[in-house]
Image (cartoon, rainbow, N blue to C red):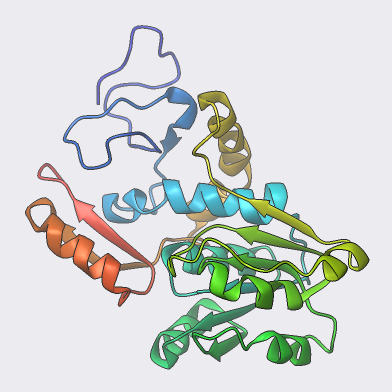
Length: 259
């Protein structure tokens, strides 16, 4: 690690993780506002799996989602990198988590992370089961990692003053019907978590809160990324094929030549 002339809070040799452009490059520049210290409890493999998904999930659960202890969370597509991260973090926050997946085996594996209820389905047919599991109340927060095919079902699953986070569309469906009566009468809140159009300052704003709230949990071992497989850099194409095939639970990590 090399430091710019105006960097004051870091020293060469510090273990650093963070978001930056050029993920597959050998050398990159990182804004110090995005830099995070790597807790001793994390090796480099797990540290590499932290910044993107955990900062996105912090935005979803804490900053915009306002998830509280004892509340219900629904994760459509719970076995993804974002899904497993949200599951762990929500359990650490004291929430009850319901997740959907097309794989019963994957849902079984996530019980060790505290998944309260796994719904085995790839279809938009889970709202009734979510309502039954929450005594007709619905969930306080839903995360849609799948896309337009389950958007309306996530809306149906929300409680009064529920929130819906739109974070992905692996199904390729970018449009969906919106129940305006439900939006109006239940006082729902819909939000996205993309950083694509944000300024560098806006992207860096959640970092301080993440360092304060969640980094200590990582140091204590309460939070740790779920890493499914590690690929060496010369197997990049295989890693991409694995990701596109959707067979993993959690994150895939690409190991650089110097790791």
